[in-house]
Image (cartoon, rainbow, N blue to C red; front, side, top):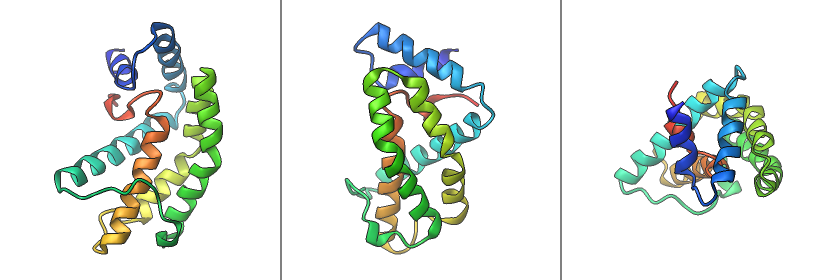
Length: 152
């Protein structure tokens, strides 16, 4: 599919072999029922980050744990920290299927975050921290593909 090619190429194309591996992993993982809804959540995260950029809101480089107030955001941050080293290790080894599977496994945490957390909160510090959390989420998988470019 052309959207898969665009999504994978957006994450970089230094090596055609690497692009092919990432594309195969995307095609494989896309057959799982949880993948499409999760891709939708990633698109939502990317859109919120773009909106923040347009509004000239600065997104901090990292998440401040002391500003995580909602249970859903604490859980999402915790699970991202738990899978980060595995995801990076899988990506470094070129095992993109395993890295994407880690992403699919956190779908419930991502859904809960969006269901229970107002990202664009009135409190400037909370809003910035929640945006940093979304950036953390999206950047973890951007080395494989830009999920926001996948068509439903």
